[in-house]
Structures are given as C-alpha cells and as structure tokens.
Image (cartoon, rainbow, N blue to C red; front, side, top):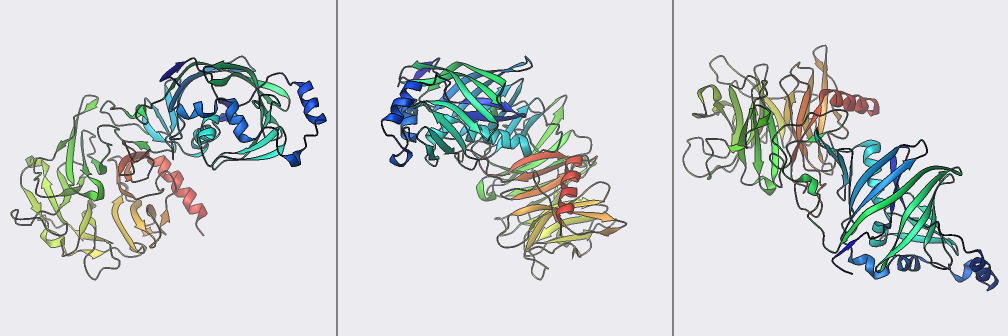
Length: 534
C-alpha cells in the first residue's frame, strides 16, 4: 500500500442519532436476488456455516491492505430530514483506538481510555452522554473493529452476522451474498443504516454514502470525502499542542485541564494556588514518583500569564513542594526537605515552611512549632488555623489531618489532630476550606484497596456533617488530591493522576495534571453523593 492514498474510500460512517454518534458500515448495493436463490437451491443451510464469515467480510474491504493504515483523515457531510447540513472532519488511529472529531470550532476525541473536548474555553474531560458518544464513535467504527483482535462475531444466518464491539452493545450486519460486503446495519429493531455507494481505490473498497432509517422512515443521509490514509501516524492527539498562557473558565458540570502545554505537561503538576486578585499563581512540578519537586510561580500581565519560573529560593540540592498562597498574596506556605539550618544535605522527610512575599522572595522561615520527625504536607491557613497532614508518630492514622492556632506574634500553638468526622480514613490529606467556611474538602484513602479520592464535608449550624466521596469529575481512577478554592470560592482547583494518556506519552500520561471546576458543579456532585449515601 503506498505511503499516502488520497480519496481513499471510507470503511465507516458516523450517524448522529438523538445527538449521539453511532458508527456503522454497510452496503446498499442492489440485492442480487438471483444469487440468493441459487445459493438456496444449492442446499446452503445455516448448519453448514455462514456464506460470509468475518474473514470474508474483512477481505471484501481490502484484507491485509487494511493493516497498513495507521492514520486516516476524512470528512463527513450529514443531511438531516429537515434540510439541515453539518460538516465534521475526522482523524482516526485504528491501531491505537483513538479518534478525533472537529466541528464548528470544537474538537472532541477519544484518547484510548477517555473522551475529551477542547474549544475557546479550554480543555475538559467529557462526562455523561457526551463522553459515551465519543466512546461509542470509537467502538463502533468499522476500521477499528477490523483492527481490534477482540472483536467477536456470531452468525445469525448465512448472510447476517452479529458484531460485538469491545465494551459496547452488539449490532447486526446484513451481507451481500456475492461480495460479502455489508448492505445494512441494524441497531435494535428500529434503527437501520443502509449503504448507498461503494467505490474501489487501489486495494481497498470503501462505502461513500449511506442512509439512516428509523422505523422505516429515512431520517439522515451521509456522504464522505477528503479521504487521506497514511501508513505512519503523527503524534497522539495533536490537539494538545502548546496553547496560549491563559486559565480556562470552566462551565457546566465538567472539569477542565489547566494550561495544557505550559502548566499541565508530561510531568507531575499539583498544588495549584492563586491569590484572591487572580494575578499570581504558584504550583509544584516534579518527575515521576514526585522526585525533584520544585515550586513554580507565574504572574498575570494583561490577558496572559508569564512563563512559569522557579521560585527564587529554589536550591538544586533540595525538594520544595505543596505551595499555597494566602488570599491576600502576602504569604506562601510550602514544604521542603531542606535542613532547618539551611545548610547541609536534605532531610529524610518534609517539614513546613513559609515565606513573606510582602518582603519579596526573601528569607524563608522554618515552622519549628508544628514540625515533627514524620512528614508534614499540604499546608493551608484558614481563619487563623494552619491545617496540614502529617505522618508523625502517635497520630490517629498513618497520614492524618492536623491544625495549629496562629498566634499574634506569628508563631503557632502545638498541633492537634482534627476531630471526628475527620481522620476516619486509612490515610487523608490536603485539607482545604471554602472561603465561607461551610465546606471542607480533602483526599481520603478509605481502605487498602481504594484509590485516594476527594471527599467533602458540609458544616451546618456550626457542626460538621458526614464525609462523602465526591463522584466524577472530582474523583476517578488514580490519585485525586490537592484541592484548593479560588479567593471568591466559585472555582475549585485539584490535581489527578487519572490514566487517560495514550501509550504512556504526552500530557495525559498518567502523571498528575491540574484541573479546575465550578462551585456549582461541586455542589451538584455533592448533592448526588449525599442522595446515594446509605
């Protein structure tokens, strides 16, 4: 197969059915009645095996030539019964099981494990029906079905196969008795897609037009064009190229990836924190396993943020992490493994530190009164109390939440563990409090088998209620941690190690990325969790 084939005819089609794409493949070639009659007269019966098995169907579309295609571009024009027309551009990576869809300035794609969307508002995970739609678009794609070794088929009759996409509902295909090409696709008793045109280009045969019928009535017609096939694929998800340095404005119920290419990279990024004025930001970045951790700072100038730079006190000998800005921007609390004296080798654990930003990035201060022989992590200051988590001996959990009162002279009282309902998990950390003081969020490892997920607790009439695990998009597979509210309390930043990356590469590679969502989305997720609570 040549390196590039132009106008190569397509093997799958996108149908928009109830605003959810469904992929199908088939042929509306004229039914060769004489061939069917001859086949029946020859004594062909189901017990002898189907006239067209899956291997013959695959051969009808190019056989081994299909395996040479690593990347496929094409355009789909859809004509609805009401006269409306839509045009979408697609890029398919069949072997990697990835699909990108561009339409009306919006890009959606399936990265192999998760659906995503990017537009002028930024990048976000697709949840609910939108995520299902892009997942199904990948699963029902016939090119992908041919490339997926787990695709299974069952013969229902000599010319009808039931095809089972990985993880999705099976559907039936009706076959031409002479060519074994697909004539129609049956998605349940009402929805049928019929192919209207097949063309041959090189070693491949592709259907170029189709009609969708619902209960026997034509509801849509689709046409394919601008086909380009490549034997080599470009890098995964090119939509994640470097973006302008601005923070996204989340809307709806989802969570948006923060700063792909300049904050969110192929390393760990976490503990993102802004001052209330929204013109200064800090976050931590590290290698895998949180090695070589450093604190980065960025300033907003006009509509864009500056390139993140290392905190001025950084020292290559030590790790600095878990930064948090007070809302007035006067102080930054953080952790470090540097020795309290400021000289010598690194400590074996992390201690709490702070720096007075009103005096510039001057002398950093070791918080003697609150540190221990264990690890101190995740500091935040709320209502005159310093909250943090620690692995110090004698605590209520192997990693527990503590707080210490800030004195008028800037020192601290002795820390005490948070009382019930907190510290009920095997381990917990990264306590944050909404500016109105009515909602606490932290990560919790409920048991040895559970992921570290985000939990929330309401305060009602001065009393804390029962903790509940937040559902998606705040919790999911992997470590969800470092929640932090904006100064006005209307947005929540957090980080997640969800493994959405393809082939372990690129930004979405399973290391920590920062996300942002709205307070409204958080409240909706919390209500959902509270209703489901026993």
